[in-house]
Image 1 (cartoon, rainbow, N blue to C red):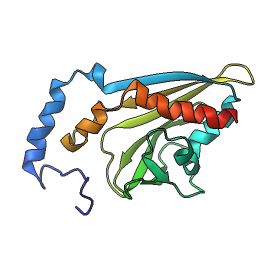
Image 2 (image 1 turned 180 degrees about the vertical axis):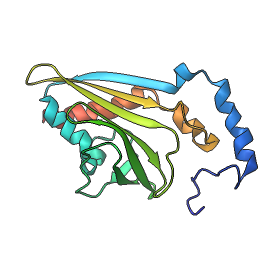
Image 3 (image 1 turned 90 degrees about the vertical axis):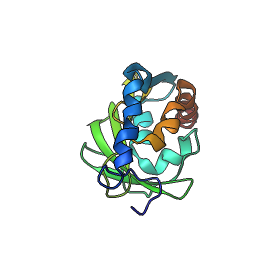
Length: 173
């Protein structure tokens, strides 16, 4: 393992499997966080800001994403895109759900690795031609790496709204 934040397998670290049992003690309903906001911009424009990873740093309200190379616009499930985090670590984001103009979901991993087990999902619903409801869901029901537990638990509706407010400001400008 070259990345110090990588997830050890039970073969690499038998303690990792035992430590993962802590996730069983947390109610699954606490592992899904959702926030919703109305944006006064066409749904297609809002969706474009989400589907183009090179725009993520512009609206990331938690200042976690530093950059994403242009040319990675998501168009289908099964593709992935690379982002560089503010700490300099690269993440590969595996697109697990995609409906053009409506929904996109991805699961982060180390570059070339398996997803860690948490999923970010964005849904955009048109409210006429000039506004949209935007819903963001953070789901960590499949997360098993105890080193990521604190960060997962600290992702609240308020932290989701921080990004959503910036997305709203960008889309409405």
